[in-house]
Each structure stands twice: as structure tokens, then as C-alpha cells.
Length: 84
Image 1 (cartoon, rainbow, N blue to C red):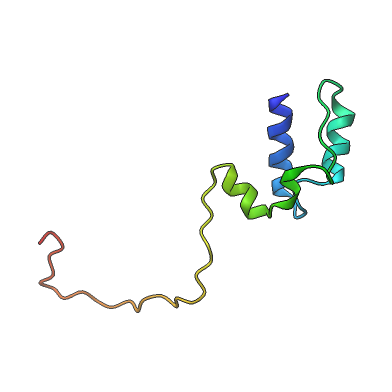
Image 2 (cartoon, rainbow, N blue to C red):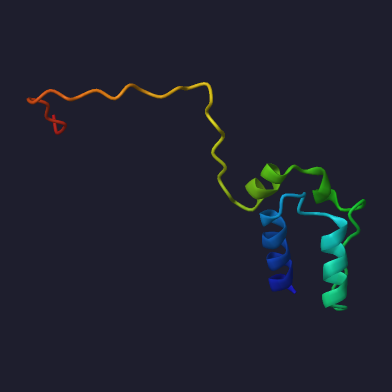
């Protein structure tokens, strides 16, 4: 059961659509009768964004930093010693 849930979540996360959708519910229902998923409309996780769901799984998402253009690369002096 748990394996099917995890596989379903991973496959759904890889897809471009929201991971909690009617297709996922239909697929789970077709593969097993031992566990019945909650319908998409009643599922509390369907209200979260893709990034919020990943964060709940423990994934660290680095936000894009478009405001910071980066540092200019410069040569270090010959007498530079990083140990001091």
C-alpha cells in the first residue's frame, strides 16, 4: 500500500500537472481494492501548491534568486593566503 502511494506521488510529482488529480485517483482505484483514495475534491492536499507538497515531503526547494546578479570574478593577489 505505502509503496503504491509513494510511487504514485513520485510519478505525479514528475508530471507537469498537480500531483493530486482525478487521473491519479482513477489509477489507484484500478490497481487495488485494498485501499480507496479520497476523491480529489475532498482531498485536503489538493489545495497545496506543488512546491508546498514537496516541502512537506522534506525536499528543500531553493528559490530562484533573480534579484542577485552574482559577483564579479576577480584574480586573487599572488601573496593571498586563505589560511590566515
